[in-house]
Image (cartoon, rainbow, N blue to C red; front, top):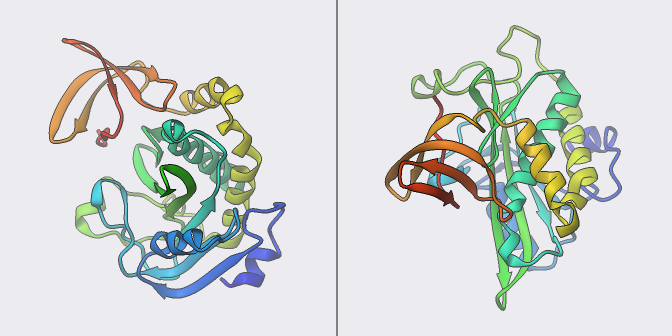
Length: 256
């Protein structure tokens, strides 16, 4: 998959018009952060067939067989207050989910804040990282790892991970899926503006699998049990516990 493959399918105005393409790289997000600090335009995409040190949330690594999946990072420069950065994972999660569904027809769901699941197993992870300059949000790098044509997971991941082709379908066109994802990210980008926050939260909630259910959240080494009530106006997860209502900012909901 090269630049011409992607460009032939793109229908965006900005996102993906500038692509930095690698065969092998340590991390697309690390490179994108460098480019962002050097002034790269919003919508620039860094993509690689293989990442040597791909990162997920909570410091995890991201497994991906070279040439089978999508591993890329998008540079954004949202005009929002830094206090609202927690909304970006929600925006990224629902936009990527809708892009994948549009491209493939798969029915997917979200796990807070932005993991994407297929039949309860994870097919896509998203890591949002900030580039801050003089206490102001200069840029955001959205790193996306999507299992597209992966058919062989390590034993430790086989019960919790899936890909878009595991239902027996033939290999999918990764460039077409990437183009759809970038289109939905661009079209939904205005939802990050304060006036449309409620719309974004509502859309995200429609696709979440655990709102209204009893869950466990891992937060800073602590396991917190409760009922997921919904999303706060800063992107946090509201949890009703035995000790009252708590807001989770950076925890994780493990797969059931």
